Image (tube, rainbow, N blue to C red; front, side, top):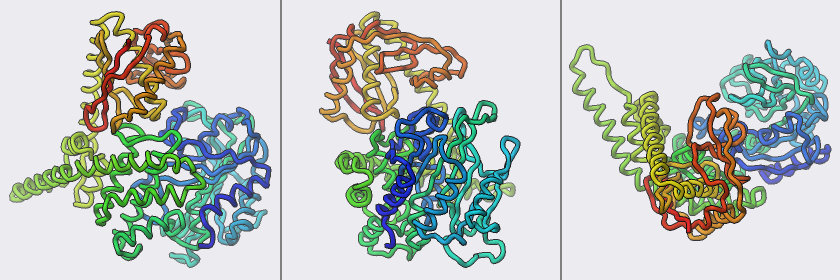
Amino acid sequence: MKITSKQLRRKWLDFYIQHGHVDIGAVSLIGDGKTGVMFNVAGMQPLMPYLLGKPHQKGKRLTNVQGCVRTVDIDEVGDPTHFTFFEMMGNWSLGDYFKKEKTAWTIEILTKVFGLDKNKICSTVFAGNESAPRDDETANLLLSQGIKKENIFFLADNWWELDGTTHTPCGPDNEWFYPRWDKPTHPGVCDINCNCGRFVEIGNDVYMQYEKLDGNKYAALKNKNVDTGFGFERMLMFLNGVTDGYKTDLFSGVISFMENALNIKYGQDEQTTKSMRIIADHMRTTVMLIGDVNGILPSNIGAGYVLRRIMRRAIRHAKKINLPTDNLLDIAKIYIEQVYDEAYPLLKQKEEYILTSIKAEIDKFNKTLELGNKEFEKVISGLERKNQFMRANPNFVEDKTISGKSAFRLYDTFGFPIELTCEMAKERGYDVDIAGFNEAFKAHQELARTTNAGVFKGGLADNGEETTKLHTACHLMLAGLRHMFGTTIEQKGSNITSERLRFDFNFDRKLTDEEVKTLEDFVNNAINRKIDIVRLEMPFKQAKQQGAYGVHKAEEDEIVSIYKIGDVDFQICGGPHVANTSELKHFKIAKQEAVSAGVRRIKAVLN
């Protein structure tokens, strides 16, 4: 190993600190809801307010190594260069230096610190469009720094912005590429545009000069900013002279463990190797998401659903190559104790919690997988019988599509993420009716929403002032649950009488005695603080922008009611509520129980 992951992390930070930057450290992998994305997908994401002009408390030159999670390419995981969790080496100028300095520093760190060959470095710059001009300035700076003219490419899509968001910084993008091997695959045409995989992007410098506005419009920012992001895993791969990211020390311990457990060699069989990569990647992401400062747990909604999909895909591939599923816990321990012990010390502190959570999901999926597989085989057998029966018909067209209804049954009854059903179907030569699945899913959601709303409203209407107090207690308890377990926790149902509240929420296990006590203390602390409760009205869009949450869905301009309980809760709700939390006296959890897969129920009283 020419350079370890710990050495690379240190070299990046040291270089930019020597150039006047401050290491600001990494933040949570879980999105804060302000940018419309579920996870932090880039190192710059937490810095958007500062890129838009807000002064940063640590200055104008910043650097860090930030963990990120992206699942848009999850189907590509299994090849040598794709990962769901990855780290981004970043540095930023907030209205300080710009293109001239950044181009020089990027070439300096790539060549003098990391030892890459300048003659092999390729770079792409923005070709321009109706919103912004062609970036000739960067191209000329590249030439002046010794990058070959034939290695500079103008591309129309060299523009960086967060999809689906407005009032966020953006600008022309200077991307950097390096070859995984020297000899061209297709002589004469084997450059960065070739699909052979020889060239891989290792990082980019974004020159954030603009703010994206509504209506696909852009305005110049007051300050010109630099946003740099270099892929940690890919850089580590290049610096160690390997073409497979899973041959670096980030994964070598896990791969070696699987080789010994299976008595096989990595790389000998293509399909087995693909499964080993998927397991290695998905278990790393699992550890990071559960062990995060705002850690989440697998569930059937939101970020928890993505985590469940990742975990169950890892479990399935473990079974596929006959790796005992309990070995996934050993793999998790390698990441916690050996790979990230220095960079992410919180993982070690949360080790028991992480391993217990993984074990719970493995056990849950193992119980349902056998039944689910049987149901899947029934669906396939049914299609095969139908096709066999209809084959005598001269107009026969073979049906190779699993219906949306069947796919939804696999999801709702057996816990199969739709992506897992699609993957299994593809392996058998079948498609899945995704539109039909979405239709069935939507109908199920609407039924649940209508049922829950009716029960909740009826409970309040029938029981007067005592139910109003318990309704407010529901808000405080949900706020407590979200504080303890993350903002993916949501109400899944509620029923209130004059004597007690019953509240359902997405969670996969029983709360421990300590967690019950923590939740009770959270609510009672809010009661003891005697917080006034304020009702506000505003458009739904504005409410969401200000951080309001709730099960209520509305058009953007629809006026909704929001109840604000100090700094504790800000929830969209029709009410009613008490005027001050002190009216609740004392909150006590009486009972907790399971409702269905991934849904827990709490019964509580006020006394």
